[in-house]
Length: 166
Image (tube, rainbow, N blue to C red; front, side, top):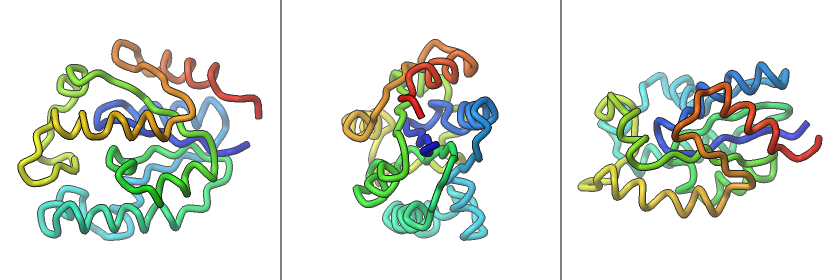
């Protein structure tokens, strides 16, 4: 089976839904944020604080391009769509599923914005980040699943129902 790549805003539930989805489909689970932390030995926020968004994007892209996923559910960081190269690589390995949430839902879910490793450009607000990324998620998505008012089991069920036949 091709891999399933989850994209979406911070707080959309990519990692949580990804684990459940991988179990349900008997697939491997890969979290690219965790891979970045393993590769660098640092927390995402630490990279952002010390080196800035541009350095973080370079590390994220390099990490994604090194992936050779087979039969895996891949939860990506919210900023992955800012890299055409990373997204082209991911799309070549499987189906891209956009876990869509509203701005209000994202704001409600994000409790730890200053420590979570969310890539915001200098002076960029959360709203501006949201508005910049939505068109990119829509551009790269093969499937879009509304997650704003759903629990994770429902989201996973909706993803499974919408996947193309293997």
